[in-house]
Image 1 (spheres, one colour):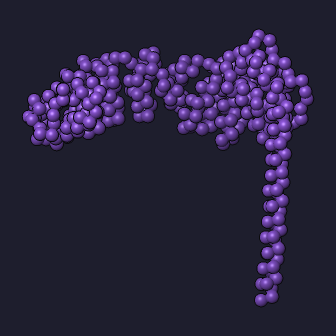
Image 2 (cartoon, rainbow, N blue to C red; image 1 turned 60 degrees about the vertical axis):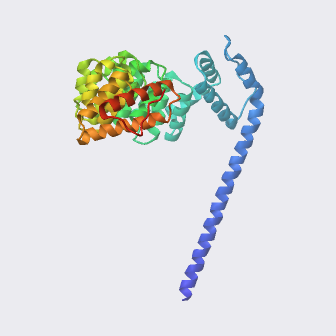
Image 3 (cartoon, rainbow, N blue to C red; image 1 turned 180 degrees about the vertical axis):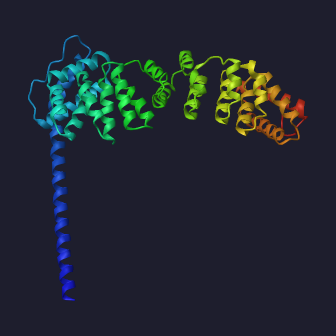
Length: 389
């Protein structure tokens, strides 16, 4: 019994000691943070007039002069962060002058030395700052660091810095190749990093989709998803037949978004596709482009085995004007008595009901009256439906 009490007392002493040590550490960190915050505030006041001068002369022809005072390490860090933010937010001449100022202040050489000779954590911090300053001569060393880096989140810090510092498209390609070798699947993140580089992003992504590597193609397609030029459509067209389902769907999506007209053979190929998602976006594209020449194709798609495709075709036909609405009602009437016919009739009645509550818009009013007319022509009068003038 006495032994148990003795052990408990010792254990209590240990807990008290650990709590005391923890309190000392927390208190020390708090004091350190307060001191750093105080230093940064004093430095902000110290450099206020200098940055007023910088902003006033940022667009001028003459180089920016360094500040007329010395600083300690904490002040140097604060100055570095302020200049990093300015380089990030400015473009053109203003950004170049901020980069030149960093070089004159010795910040570029300081971080280059840290990148080449420091420990791992020092190299990582140097890589981050060199990227912020867009130091092009740092690219070879950054690429070497990236190639030997293990697979973790810090990999992307180095990769983004390479993109920011890139001297040309080849630097970006080398970075992408190394990251893809380390980590497959982070395609959207890679696209975001590539867009940091001062290169023609569209041309680079278009080149990626011409490669045999599926990983490069994925990056290229995700990079091109916001481009709507016809030349993009021609670039992705060959990928419509890709054996990779994800690549195929993305290529179809970009192709349909980039064209102003879809050839009939392409329409037929897409509407025969085995995946209903592809058939859905195909009929949606026909409707969005108002391709009334394909009303017959849209009518055939109403009888698709997929309800999603059938519904998308119905929604597309009532966007294609009087002819599309007439074909929709006619197809629904011909399929009367079948499950598909009742489904189409229900879609028409639901859309009429939806339009009837928003008749202040002329386009909706016209579509409402046209839909009611053709519906009643095929199905007879419906007590719940009224034409509106």
